[in-house]
Structure formats: structure tokens, C-alpha cells
Length: 203
Image 1 (cartoon, rainbow, N blue to C red):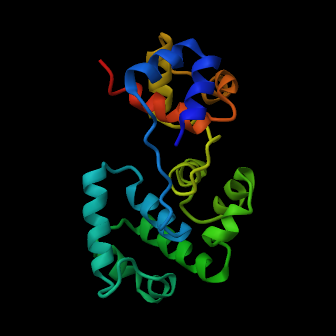
Image 2 (image 1 turned 135 degrees about the vertical axis):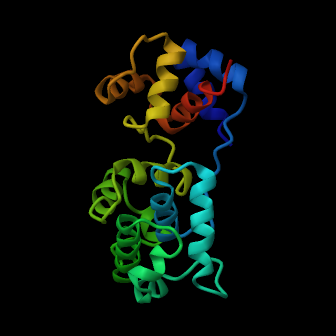
């Protein structure tokens, strides 16, 4: 799926070429059956938690709405803050999830079809107006839900750590430095970011 991107990155960057050879093909696949609002709710639930803890909370959250694989925006809006917090959500996360759901009912959170018509920058601007949704959350949404291939999450700690390890930097690059360094990876910066994450798993 990403063979063209891998060839381009290997030709543009010898260091990344070596990483691609060691790691193998990129396995990122967009979550095509996941509505944008659901993706944002899940992302908020995962903020500042490890994957296992976040998934336990999500499972309890979904269980609050029997008979559904995932609750509708309307069902979330109708639920009280106390109900949402009973799943283990913090007050801030419960408020953010209710705001995501509310804005999904008004159309501010686009459908997948509408999102496909919007640029990355437009989606970042639009979705960061939602409570609790920052640029990083939208960038993860762009990469992993919509499958956008030229997103570089310069504020992501893992990407910065992977870059420093791969390129022998003694200190982590600043977001501004990483943005400049990542110019060589266009138009496949999402794929390059995925390899920076994989660097952290390498010996």
C-alpha cells in the first residue's frame, strides 16, 4: 500500500532508507469504518493514559449504552456528566466527549465524506475548536482514521525521540527543527513519522 512512499523516502533520505530496510513495509491502514466523531472520542479517552488503561475505560464507556457497538452522538449528549464519569473518565474528558458529540449533531464534526473534501489545515482549524481536542489529536485522526499521508506531528514526543535516535542528535529536535528537517519527506511525512515511532522499538 505504501511502496511508492517508501521508495520516495529511501531516495530522499539515506538514514530513513536504512530504517525502512530494517523495519520493513509500513503497516498503517486507515480505519475506514470509523466515523470521525467516534475517532475523536476514542482519542480523547486515550489522552495521557497507556493503551490498556484507556481501553478499559472505553469499554466501560461503551457499556453505558447497551445494544450499540459505539454510542451515537445523540445518546452521549443525552447522558449526564455523572454517567460518563462512572466509566472512569475525568471531568475534563467527560466534558470534551460531550462537546465532540454535541458538535457532531450540529455538523461541526464532519462526516467521513465531508472530511474527505477538507484539507488537513482546514480540519485542524475546525476540529481544534472542540473542547479538549488539540492539534496532536487531530493529527492522529488525519493519519490513522483518514489515512492522510503528509502529516508530520512535530509535537509528538515519540516522533521527536525516534528522530533524535535515528539521526544521532544529543537533544530532541524542537517542533520547528523537526518541521524543517521533515521537508525532505514530503509528500509522505505521515509514513516517515510512522518509521520514527518504529525506531524506538529497534535495538
